[in-house]
Amino acid sequence: MQATRPAVSRPTEADIDALLRQMTLDEKIGQMTQAEKNSIPPEDVATYFLGSVLSGGGGNPDPNTPAAWAAMVRAYQDAALKTRLRIPLIYGVDAVHGHNNVYGAVIFPHNIGLGATRDRDLVQRIANATSRELMATHVHFNFAPAVTVPQDIRWGRTYEGYSEDTDLVTALGTAYVQGTQDDDPRVLASVKHYIADGGTSWGTSKTYEWLTGNWQAPDGKYNIDQGDAEMDEATLRELFLPPYRACIEAGAQNIMVSFSSWLGLKMHAHSYLINDVLKGELGFQGFVISDWMAINQIDKDYPTSVITAVNAGLDMIMVPYDYKLFISTLKKAVEAGAVSLARIDDAVRRILRVKAWVGLFEQPFGRDDLLTSVGSAEHRQLAREAVRKSAVLLKNEGVLPLAKTLPLIVAGRGADDIGMQCGGWTISWLGAHGATTIGTSILDGLRQSVPDPALITYDQQGKFAAGVKAPVGIVVVGESPYAEGMGDSNDLHLAAEDKAVIEQTRQHCDKLIVLLISGRPLIINDELAQADAFVALWLPGTEGGGVADVLLGAAPFTGKLSYTWPRRMDQLPLKTLKQDPDGPLFPFGFGL
Image 1 (cartoon, rainbow, N blue to C red):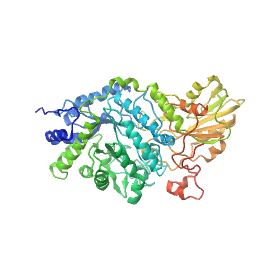
Image 2 (tube, rainbow, N blue to C red):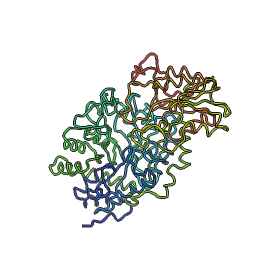
Image 3 (cartoon, rainbow, N blue to C red):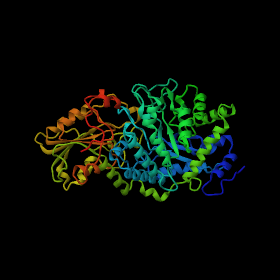
């Protein structure tokens, strides 16, 4: 039978209840299911009534263009609108620093850099620009912002956190939510990862003998990501709960749950923290979504995992592969009484409520007129502003700002590498070295900002001719791209090749500037001593011209550290560093 949709353009709560009464159990469970686009053809969206589809890191169409993205997402939405009730789908992506899966989109600095700006207005404008690029491709669901409060920089997701400081994370996280959801129809922000994902202990990551692969379970490289937050409830609430409370007050309608555990219990199984604290105490009325295949870690028995997660308060499950298995498993659980129909109705009501709030019933697609905004000059200027404001000057002994007519030598593997500038979550999950997308490298930014590019001599390895001696040398070094637990590391020293190029270049210049590309503070005592000036660039993204702006004096250095900078590895984690009598190399808030 062909059921009727709500008569009004934007459904009311009464309309949603009426729609819910028309839905079969299959239709309800479908709304609770989110599959990854590489795993599901559009026609299965209609067959199984799916509520959402996502692109994971690297979940791109071929060719990877904005227009192909728009066509891909539209095909899934078209399928959803062919179902009996014509309930629109909501398509999700991890646009964590711009629409970063899309070739040619603007890649903004990662959150650690934005934390150094301390600029709420800037963060809000970046979120809004990202949303416009998302809307151009019909994407209404952004798995951002991360409001993690990292307490151990060995964590591979440190760069996803604005700061180690709860208040700063709260201020910038709420700004991002507001910027994301400014327009109408809206893009839905997903505040993540609930809760204390930045508070896990080193060495507590687990492997699961019933799971394989990087996406499903830590593979031996993980040491702290997805680990256990070993702290009392008072500490959990003080450090990690305020951003969620504030984001909900700022209008957040979606929360993503963390892979991690609290005192041994997986967050995806934590009814107290989801049902009692989030939905009860904080009054959260939106829907709660799982992380990628995270429910599978709860128990080796898959039905037990599904039942536990849904009863713990998960409303939508990011499956992402075996959507048919999830749907059949949950249906059997409801029919057996292991999950109540009331719990199903609550989850679906929350999902429909949010879809109505986003405006999907009224306008299920995005805006084709915004396609030209993807990678636009306006958005690139905004990103360049963010690069300028995020750079932190750690040392300057009479070198900066540079005169535009000064001969320079430039070296280092980060000097002409867009992929290294951008870091992880860029075109693919882990990111990659090289010209992975459109942008301006730091070297190109310098060349474009001086009157005579011939004044700049470049050699990646710093192997300049014997007679070359420049007034100033610039070396760009740092971390190779990584994401999540693949970046967990108990050795935060620079690579041998980076140390070598600094020493090599030092011999060919009177003054040396070291520029550091990294997703966290590194151990840099020796390199700091060798340099006359030292700048922390974090992961600046595609607009390397912003680096030239601060080096050449077109803009002042204003960035301040949003993390305490350690002297040695044995000072980690943060609580150890705070108790160390030697103190940090640079304190929180430092910046010349």
